[in-house]
Amino acid sequence: MTGANPILEIENKYKQSIWMDNLSRDLIESGELKELIASRGIHGITSNPAIFEKAIAGNKIYDADIEAGIKAGKSVNEIYESLVFADIGNACDIFKPVYEETKGVDGYVSIEVPPTIAKDTATTISEARRYYKAIGRENLMIKIPGTPEGLPAVEQVIADGINVNVTLLFSIESYVNTAWAYISGLEKRAAAGEDISNIASVASFFLSRIDTNIDNRIDAKLKSGINGDIGAKLIAIKGKVAIANAKIAYQKYKEIFGSERWKALAAKGAQVQRLLWASTSTKNPEYSDVMYVDELVGAHTVNTLPPNTIEACADHCDPANRIESNIERAYQIIDSLKDANIKIDIDEVMAELLEEGIDKFIKPFESLMKSLEDKVNQLTPV
Image (cartoon, rainbow, N blue to C red):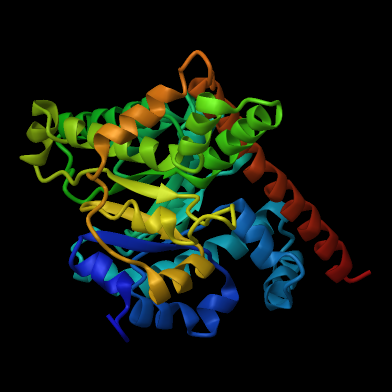
């Protein structure tokens, strides 16, 4: 496959969409984003508070807009939103041709509601509505965390006709609940006589963080002196739990979107809620830098990759339809965690990761607001 781009093969032959997990004004204004769509086949983009902190903090490209916000008497939060909404809106415009070519399957740009409201259903609903209206693009997706409080918000926002990216999904149970929240939202909308054919949603299922957490637990057990057969069992599942978990989630996806309840909505033109593989940069240098791409290629899914993983994949991904391979082994890997000698509580791991995940977005969000406040003070004329 010399000279070919494996990303294009993943999309054209295996019907998986590749999105990018990164956004900044530099990327938009330099023309690099347009170039990535053309040369790398990028079909959508996701953002989060950590990405915006990296993009805005210490970047002079935003100074003129910050100064304009100061002159207009805007608060720090209003200035933050004006910067982010402008970038998201411009990215939506750049992806509009992809949205049109794919008839609303791809070409989406995701923006997250403030992570500080992850456990507040009512505020999540009102902020999702406000963000969608303010940015005003049909290829916008609002990111809502898949917390117990977030899922009723997902249902309502889908019923409102707003595209949703449900983020921070780790456990199979939370994924299943997410898929049914999407279906319930569509049912509500259809019952109200509204069109459901133009609504899109993805369920963002996280990967590398699961392996990092479980690998650390395995290493601790091995260091404590566990060896022999049990040690060999532990080594055999190292770095394999996240992919096994994702493969099982895909089996659940097929069950749910093959159900009679779903078929009634599909008959009215509804789109399936695709599984999106997130947190796909490999954290352990001993593992392949594209393992969360190669192992999870499959139809009607999305993989969102940070820039380094996009370049690695364009260079040496090895596409094949692997999402349905070794399913029995995937179940065995997850079951083996319950082994009396291994005793890794996957429910505890998933709950821990969800809390950590919210925290990993709250901290950069608060840090960004602080650095923006400092910049406002610095640029405000005395």
